[in-house]
Amino acid sequence: MKTGPSLLTPFVRSDAQGAVLAETLLDPSTELSISEIARRADVLPAVAHREVTRLVEADVLRDRRQGNNRLVRPNTEHPLWSLMSQLVAETYGPVPVLRHLLGGIDGVAGSFIYGSWAARRSGQPGPPPRDIDVLVVGTPSRTDLLDVADAAREKLHLDVNIHATTPTAWAAKDDPFLVTVASRPLIELTRSETADA
Picture 1: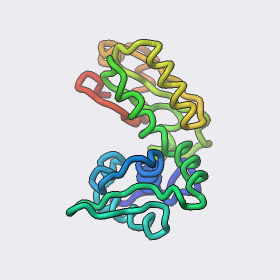
Picture 2: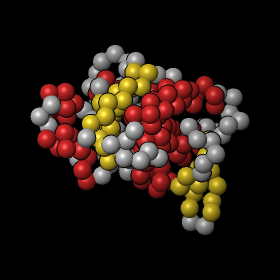
Picture 3: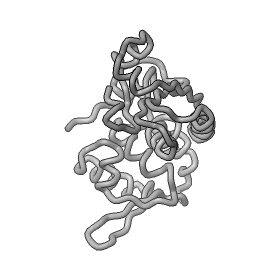
Picture 4: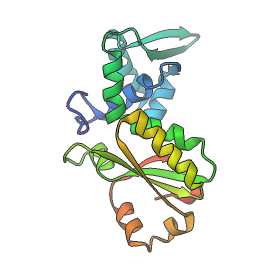
């Protein structure tokens, strides 16, 4: 699988590298296996292995062996770690940050990023995204969604706009807004059977 150049930032070689960086740099307390990084970043294990190896060789990541597993974590002592993690958070961070935040909310049947960020991540050229648009399918409380938006905004340094809809409305696709959202690039965050696009 060939990965194309990054349209989210010129400072990251490819979307695969950006996704691997986002999954590894943004939570310094977590060690991940190569297979877990591949799953979370939605890349082939061989791609994750190659990107992790490059990042370990550059001292951006550290690794250790535990049995047959190679566990990886960010090198927080790297002189550019803070700057790299901020750049990665603002460009590739929306998926892991929002997936984590929405994963703990009751009533979320599925969630997607749409709009300009999803378009850039899907390979459509255009200006850099200035905000993150999120569609939540389900019946979570408005307070919970506002808390998620605030926490994501603080971590990503971008405005986060969350639109909620019911599973019935999402499945019916008779709302013009939802028809438009469904016809454009969507990046899946969380999923259940009732939230299929």
